[in-house]
Amino acid sequence: MKKLLLWLVALVSFSAGALQAQDVVGTWQGTLQAEKDLRIVVKVSKTDAGALKTVNYSIDQGGQPMNANTSSLQGSTFKFTITGIGGSYEGKVSADGKTITGTWTQGKPLPLVLTRVTPETAWAIPEPPPPPKMMAADASPTFDVATIKPSDPEKQGHGIRVNGRNFSTLNTTLADLIEFSYGVHMRQIVGAPEWVDKDKYDIAAVPDGEGMPNDKQWKGMIQKLIADRFKLKFHHDKKELAAYALTVGKTPLKITKSESNGPLPGLFFHPVTGGLMLTTRNAKIEDFTGLLQAIVLDRPVVDQTGIEGRYDFDLSFTPDDSQFNGRFHTAAATENPLPGLFTAIQEQLGFKLDPVKTAVDVLMIDHAEKPTDN
Image 1 (cartoon, rainbow, N blue to C red):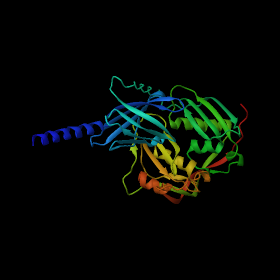
Image 2 (image 1 turned 45 degrees about the vertical axis):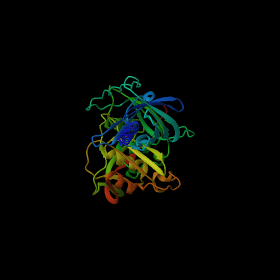
Image 3 (image 1 turned 30 degrees about the vertical axis):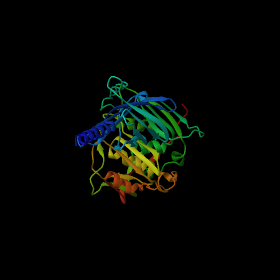
């Protein structure tokens, strides 16, 4: 009987040790061998509800915290995903609980071995940069320096970019600039010469004054630029058009109030299996509808949600042939295909996007000229 009790005590001790070995709470680090070596720190904790919370830091890329959307430990398999960058990790925890041998996948799978570390042996995480000094909210800036050049037809890409106090565009038309700065769809630009939607330009500009402009000030500067350099003149009118209305659905909203104090929203697409993911950070709902009407859909999108503030959310969907001007070709079907845009908006965000016919503001173009050489 005494031997049996000793055996049971040993079994309990072994089980407790095995469970402890598989506990991933703590700080882990390892080197990801990409095009250049990248030091990675992963901090795992538990929420009040007992769920795993994982934060990833790429030390050699600024070290900004990236919160995992999902984290799990099943047996000895540890997984987490960061949908905002399309990344995921899966690894096996060693029997002694000191290492996790696994793979980081962000397009191309790469091996990543994580080692448990103490506060004394952990790599130092860089201090976050100080928030930018903002331009006075009542300032009405203009571009101090601006160059406009015809785009190189051999150069690929298209877009409008703000990097610090530098504004630039690649392969953008005057119509693109009007749509972006005035928040309208191409169908709301009426009477423009044909070249307005055909001729492409690259722009580089820097604002006058001090501080970082907010999004309203950036758009105001673009409006002034196209009035000055493209001699754009127009007047407003109302016209009944086919449009889409974004409204709040019957299910609870699945968007998160943004904790960012940055002045600009971030919205970008990246491919995922079977479709696209839209990552939205620090954005107003009108930023979201503006992106939908400017890039995705073939008609204006009207925000009828009445929701104020800035939010973070992710949206994964499979575009159809009518979206992105038919430029997106859906990958081969998968076992778990992504929903279409309208279903995804309802299921993943709690909004509804419905076709409507309504009176919308239109810009009646009175005059526009091609810009002169710099």
